[in-house]
Image (tube, rainbow, N blue to C red; front, side, top):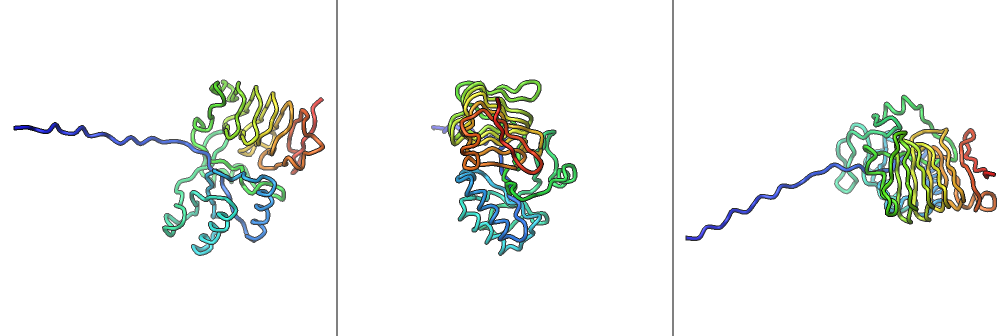
Amino acid sequence: MTFAAPLEAKSIRFRARSFVAFTLTPEAPLDVWLEGLDHWIGNSPGYFAGRPVVLDLNTLKPDVAAIESLVGVLGHRGIRVYAIELDGHTALAPNLPPVLVGAKEATTDGLLPRKAREDVSGEGKAEGRAPEAGAATVGDGKAGASKAGDSEPQVEASGTLMIKAPIRSGQAIVHPHGDVIVLGSVASGSEIIAAGSIHVYGTLRGRASAGALGNRGARIFCRKNEAELLAVDGWYVTAEEMEGVSRGKPVQAFLDGDALRVSTLS
């Protein structure tokens, strides 16, 4: 008599990972908000391409029909909504993105509930600021520090992320705990997002967003400015706005009141 050997049961492994998601918070009147969003997209084509976006509807509080319409409108603009945040709802229609439950905002000190961060920071919106495009939600930050070139980034004891190799096109460096220092150049189509300041000792051709978690004192420094976009605490300037003024020069970018200044370094 022949007996078949029992098949060995294979366990399914579940692992937690942290990803960066950009939060859009529509406000009334919606047509004015969409106009501001179109201006942002016009200045930064492809900015949302491939980016997970969370739609925070706690300010607008639309009904289900309006949510479906808004998701479609954003989709036509190349913005894919991965999840929706709306207090008091646990699920929407099956054709809509899932409702995100228990979302937390990232801060330089860690993770806080969304309401707690609003109370602490007193955040507001003003004309000329990106419509919450730079509000990144992160986990422990480890997943955000991706490899650049053949050299792995090193986080110093001070919280500064040191990258010793150039950043290639398509790479995204997200560091929610301090400054980012790049010893090489930053290629077009790449991006650096930092809670603190950004220092690039080569040519900066990609996008750089400093003070991404509300640090208005953050700055961006680079040896040669060929950036597609510079932003501090959500306030931004584009390549077109810097043309003929600070292009090809060593510069620093910083907030001066409610405007982002880009000045040359001697």
